[in-house]
Each structure stands twice: as structure tokens, then as C-alpha cells.
Length: 261
Ligand SMILES: O=C[C@H](O)COP(=O)(O)O
Image (cartoon, rainbow, N blue to C red):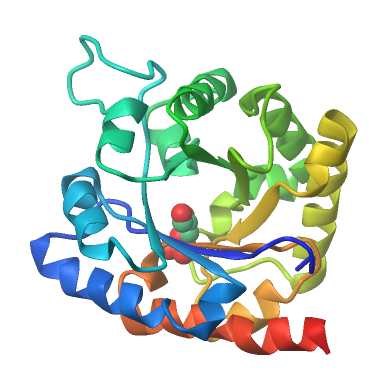
């Protein structure tokens, strides 16, 4: 992690969660509203069906609520089944994930489409969490850096800033598999992403948060979150249970105190 960037622990519930899961949201909101919240942010992105009720439940807590995707048109239109950034804002959510590899793969979303979605998010005052990551084949071919560079170049609007953008590096082969890159590999990739952002955005690129995502769990969180240039996590499966999410959140206690020491 980099000490001058406020870390974020974010959960992406994907297509999981019904009204009966709201207890988990309540428990997470309660768990992240203690003293650690002065140094660390927490976010849950439930499915769209729970968005409004989740923000209602968490009002006056430190837990932020985000959406998992938005249409590239910011407001309204004839787009059956889609939701817009304006609708997300109307639910009082503050963040939206765009370009998750599951959407890139299942819906053929291109870098340009992801860029348009990020712009739609900015238009409505939302923070876009822009996901990038290489597939297993691309990694095996030694193309990880090239792929990430292309995704960053094509998916980030020119007016991306630390206030409106978070990058999540999620190796596709690590998502939901229990496999993660070695710590030195994550360190190398995050350092390259940081360098890429600084080359494009100058000083502004120094403070855009870089999350790691892909099989983060209570057992490996301390190691992954302690890596240089890792400013937090985007957690899938392990964010569904409050106890697991909070255990990852609390992994930061030691990391932050060792940075301060
Ligand atoms: O958005 C979250 C990621 O896809 C990671 O999912 P996972 O933690 O279940 O591997």
C-alpha cells in the first residue's frame, strides 16, 4: 500500500443477494463504523435490486454503497433492462463498477464502451471503479503488461482524477478460483499501472486508488493488502458474509499501524 492514499475495502456482490441478505449489509455497516474508519473506507456493491434499500439502511454509517454497472448513456432512454448513472445516483449510491471482466466477457464490452460508462458515471457525480485484468492465456503468453496498458489507455477518460476514478486490477484467472498472483507479481503490476497513470495524468495519477481483486479472502488479505501500490481490495465471494468482509477490513489494522510506526 502507499501511505498517503486512503485505502478502500470494497465488496462486489455480483448476482448474489436478496432481501434476506440485508442483515449482512447491516452487520458490515456496523463493523466498519468504528475507529478504523478514520483511516479506511468501505464500500459494498449489492445487486441493483437492493441498491436503494441498502443506502437507506446505511445512512449515517461509514459504509458506502455502489452499483455494479451502468449504461453508457448517463440519464434516460430506450434501453430495456439497463440502469443509468442517474438512476444509481437517485438511489443515493456513490460508486459504480465499470468494465468488470465478467461484463467484458459475457456482454463483449470493449474498452471504449467502458470509457463511455465511466464518463456517464462522472456526469452524475459518481466514482467509477474501472476494472482491468489479463486472462490466463494472456498471462501465459507474457502479455500481461501490454494488455493492462491497452485497457488503461482505452477505458480511462482523459478527465479521470483521484476523486472520480478508482482502478481495480483483477487478473481474470484469479477471480473466484482461489488462485492469486505471487506478492512480487502484484507489486510489479501495480507499480507499472501507477507509472502508466502518472505518465498520462501527471501528479493526478499519483493518487488514483489502485485496488487488487481476485480471490482475496481473510487468509491472504494481510499479505495482499500490504503490497506497495495496493490501496485496497475489490472482493467478490468473501464480501457476501459480513464476518469475512470485516476480517479483511480488519487486516488493515496491523498494516496501517506498521505504516505509522
Ligand atoms: O469484483 C470482484 C472480483 O471479481 C473478485 O471476485 P472473487 O473475490 O470472488 O475472486
